[in-house]
Length: 379
Image 1: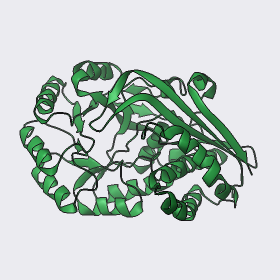
Image 2: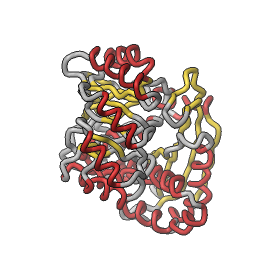
Image 3: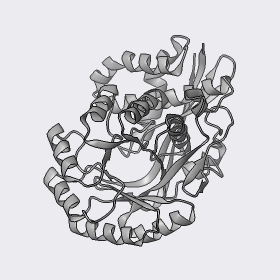
């Protein structure tokens, strides 16, 4: 049983010298929202809430945790993080309807869930992955993500030098040029290396069919979000039938029912929930187990700071299967300064610490220059 006494949140922003382009928009800074929980014994745990979009979202999520959800966190003692996750999700349903903001509430609760899992694993003296699964290994495969297709050759070369053997490239800008550039990149890979592509929901069904037909000679490990996630079930099924590679998605699904449907519909071969965006550890570990049992590949999505990446790695290690951890190949001080020296990738693998909880405590003082908000509330 855990009684929480204090919640702290921070928002950070790092301006980008080279903006990160996607098919739907451009990131001109790297934001992050971190949360720290402290219990009645003085034990602490850290979490992270998704805040990449909208551009002004970080400070909103940090305040949302303190001003709309904290009182619910303090209202009772918790037997588990999963109990808190389910209770907060249920008790904020009317606020979600009132505000029409299911995403921000889900992201705030996800950050709190990660923090409580970290705290509880520390109390039981177990690394988080082994609090989930006692036989979990302390390592997991990883791939380099966020690779801009126009800079693909240089970014893949840098990622290879850093120890990666799999790479994901952003597409969705121009059907013909994307396919030509992708083909060139695939031909440049070494034996045993993998290539994936992420379209970020860029295309109509017909455009996506054209793309998969055009690149049918290219060996892709998966094609991610080629069409809108809310496209008709029949459209996803038709595209899956036309594609020679597995389709991937999940970062923009929200809720247990949505993931159960995605797993059971068979259109997605790769399931990709984002622990900082929905579910935290509680929801995403359940999804991972269900996906693997159904014969799907669980590859957690993540594009943020260091805490969410650590949580994603622990969930993946605990779940098992043949999935890979997504690690953004673009510069991000909110990861490298917060967690100096981690992750280290060797032969395509990342190692986790056997230290209790997430295994590392973030160095918040190293992020002071990027801070845009901090606040706290006590029980």
